[in-house]
Image (cartoon, rainbow, N blue to C red):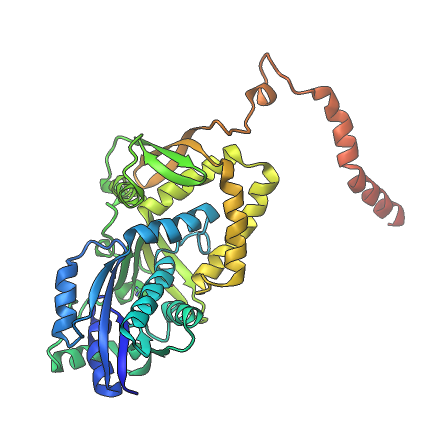
Amino acid sequence: MSGKIVLAYSGGLDTSVAVRWVKEERGLDVVAIGVDVGEERDYDAILQKALAVGALPESRIIDAKEEFVTEYIWPALKAGACYESKYYLATALARPLIAKLIVDVAHEVGATAVGHGSTGKGNDQVRFDVTFAALDGKLDIVAPAREWGMTREEEIEYAERFNIPVPIAKASPYSIDVNLWGRSVECGIIEDAAVEPPEDAYEMTVNPVDAPDTPQIVEITFEKGVPVAIDGDAPGPVALVEKANKLAGSHGVGRVDMLENRLVGIKSREVYESPAAVLLSLAHREMEALTLDRDTAHYKALVAQRYSELVYFGLWHSPLREHLQAFVDSTQERVSGKVRMKLYKGSCFVVGRESPESLYRTDLATYDVGDMYDASAGAGFCKIWGLPVRVAQERDRASR
Ligand code: ARG
């Protein structure tokens, strides 16, 4: 192989070693692309590091925050996506976007290959590879960390040999992925599933024990299933998510300790922090409770489960995910209004909701005066509703 490869670059150990390794082992010149999906980092330093370890001058940082929120996070939020009821899919949602941007650059610079720093044990390789192939099946895919067969220690030695800066201490090798929708932490002591994650695993959330003693009420405004304002302030999608992270994180909301089923068959212990995802997703569910009819709400919960699997399994571009998205988007037409959530020492719960599209009718629900519900129809309804149950039980008793 010879030519150019566009490599997803994070500035971390794996991708820094990869820049050098791809050059040494494959003879490919590397265009390193750092994608800003909301991790607060010194991106200029990251770019300089890429160039220092040998990447081509076409290397660059792409600010993809807005696209990430509007094209990936909002669709997933509307779908109620949460893998195995705990993980709001921050990493899984960012991968297809990063892969798409890599393919765009590959076309622009005339590269023959694309690559990423994921290992062969995780889900991220699948998300990258599947998206690369979906968007341009002719590009070669190189995943150095999957191919080089180095242990983490050997990788650190390789880095030291080629003067590649090693960003983490050898003693605490967490693998961390951060974006606007949350933070994923694995490796190190976290691999011991029996042990409580140490406090240094967390960054976006305060320990609930140290959270304010006074609860805080936060009002989220939704338009067609999308959060547009917090406490009346509508700063735009990216700033809104950032604000939600700060608010919920300051109350210790969003910590998740999870033993999850990876696509590749391994169970792994992960720590997540997703303050904004928890706050906005719980609020969204309450908005739906008020504005969706029962059957749609129940059916949508089934869709959410399948949708979450598809996202987690790297199938963002699959026909089924797109068809389910069309269903989800159609359900959101009237999911508008306001939800008030209370944040208090690690918990986040609804305390009020209102909507011009509300299906909640106090004149039907009330047990007080003004009841419009015809309760006299109840007996007849019960008789017909229970008819098949009654018939079946009568048969079973007769044949016993
Ligand atoms: N297990 C999560 C997922 O599959 C998080 C992966 C995090 N990646 C990382 N490099 N730490 O989406």
